Amino acid sequence: MISIQSVSKAFRPAGGGPPNQVLEGVSLHVPPSCLYGLIGPGAAGKSILLKMIVGLMKPDAGSITVDGVDVTQASELDLQKMRLKFGMLFQNNALFDHMTVGDNIAFPLRRLTDLGEDQIKDRVMERLSHVALTGFEGRLPAGLSGGQKKRVGVARATITKAPIVLYDEPAAGLDPVTSQKIFELLREEQRASGATVVMVSSDLDRLLTVTDRIGMMYRGRLIFDGTTHEAQTSTEPRVRQFVHGLTEGPL
Amino acid sequence: MAAQTTNPEKAAAPGAIATFLAALGGGFLSAAHTAGGMTILFAKILARTVRLRIDARELWKNLYKMAVKSLPIVVVTALFTGAIMVIQAATIVKRYGAEGLLGWGAGFGTLREIAPLLTALMISGRVGANNTAELGTMVVTEQLDALRVLAIDPIAFLIAPRFIAIVSTLFMMTLFADALALFGAAYTGQALLGVSTTTFYNGLTVGLLDFGDVASGLFKSVVFGLVMALASCHFGLATTGGAPGVGRAVNATVVTSAAGIFVLDYLVSFAIGG
Image (cartoon, rainbow over all chains, first blue to last red; front, side, top):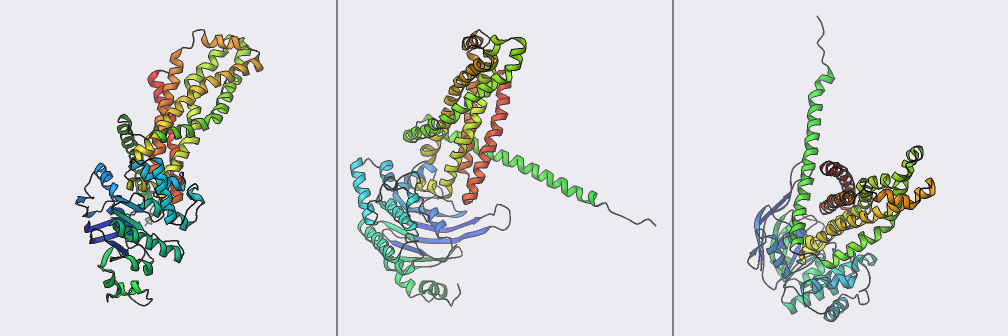
């Protein structure tokens, strides 16, 4: 279970000036085996919250516990152990430039497991076929389109079958058909593995078809936390406007 | 009644002094920040290295990329350096008929100073700058964060192998440059001054030069390698601000490495007497 308690974060501009408050008193709980969708307009603090959950950034105040471990207080060694539970897709994919697609996807298995090379190869091929990239294993990331890179990132994030998976914009840059396939794939895998998933996405139409719960962030604050059905029927003006894509409203 | 006037230069003086002092203080703070960052990084690398927590595959890959691929530029630099030493000595050698001292003259400067210094500057431009650009790009594209999320220690996996590879590369390339520069000097002496390679070799080995001269240059190469490796890794890891940030980091590496190499060359020369 992921539990976030009163988390705040501000960035101080290098040249001075007032701090930029990116998160303010955010509290939320992601139950085990839940597919949690985090939505909100740009610069609402969603990606920063994901990075804090995995311990890549520390909040100025508040605590984040993952399966009972306080990420904000953990040493680098403890964080390293805790991260074995995580898979993550970054907003800009973060593929290793100098490795082929196959090596990128195989990398976590080679580094973190005792699997033989044949088994690793089979798993990589299976992942590639899931994201419709069969035959791309020998290519370098620089030779892929934005959507293809995203799919490689999804394959790498899911190959270890980690119990907690964080996706930052898994469908950005994908066409509607591939996007729907990716969401369905991620949902299927989450159901099969029982993983806890937190997903940030701007593709609300598709996101709302797969999530169990939704949290909406706005200007660094969590303004809504409820089931997907509650989000779709919410009368909170900002949630209603954002979820239904209305041009008129407070946002 | 005399009109009261104010001297604008005098009025502006305190502001100018304050600005100058602020800039000076800022410069010292920045230098202290860099030195502190490099020291902390060195401690982290050392901790992984003594516990053998470094990635052997990355180490070999970087040794190939940094050392083997630097050979052409080192060959050219060293051969011409030796030749230049002879050309510079030619006037004195001819005037005083000191052919027997040509080997000593070329060897002394080359082994103790020129070969380690020029090799360090060449490797800094080729390897140090490239290392910073690679690490900086990995930082701004979140590849280092991806490593951390995969529970992989970036210092053990990426930084320590590069650090060891840079220091080893500079040591090996300096040794190689020593030999090649003397080779270039010997044959340039023969071609331009008619000094036989035997005479040149005798000048080198007659007793005026000893192992201490070679060791002095090699010791310097290790010191230069340390500062270059630390600077390139530190500025690479500290990169912020996207592609322009990578450019700034590379620039900082080149400037810091070059300045560090010259300052340390002076200090080491002073400490070991040459």
